[in-house]
Image (tube, rainbow, N blue to C red; front, side):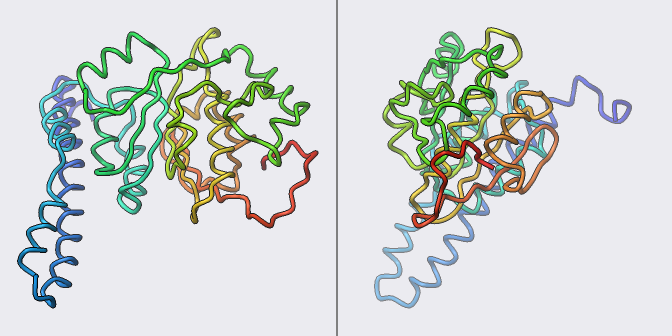
Length: 289
């Protein structure tokens, strides 16, 4: 591959592909929806005025236009590769506008927000300096700076101790104010708890040195939110960096291998159903899977 495409030009190709992905998604969605709307409107007396309104509804949003320009002209491209991105993109095409929660701000944030037009895309970032830089460069993004109460070096002990803490058990699991369960994300903005998320992307916080927060709590909390879902349908959870031991171990403990529906590169995709309202759950059972 290196002999066919010079390394100094690869960023150009990647940037063009990403711009095409965003632009193509926008064009495809707009065309299909506008066509359906037009067929319906033609049978009504006010077809012309409603057609104008429909066209306005499906016109490009500012963040989509910014994303196309950004990725077409920048040497900085997302951390995930095209195969990994495509898994999440295919779900977004079906569900958008959706509620999309992303752990971490990065070089792909503008892309994720643009692929969920008119939906809610929220980013959570623990690194204050990085948070300030990204939000300054991309003020359109909806993001919060957050703090985590875990460290990567605690991963093994957290995996053992949660099995002895009833507030962590599936039958009683909750997040807001759950101080006893060390894996529960607490102290986050109300928007995090008050929104029922359709998709969650776990690509942060940092998890590559001992004092880093690690992704243990993010994975556990994603499982809790998915199980507690009230709306119909599954919750889609995308976990990146599953080549690392902690991510893989916690995914199999809480997100469950039986709910894994797709994978590419270092990304796993889970479709987790909610616990049925009339389901019988053993209050003393710590197992999520």
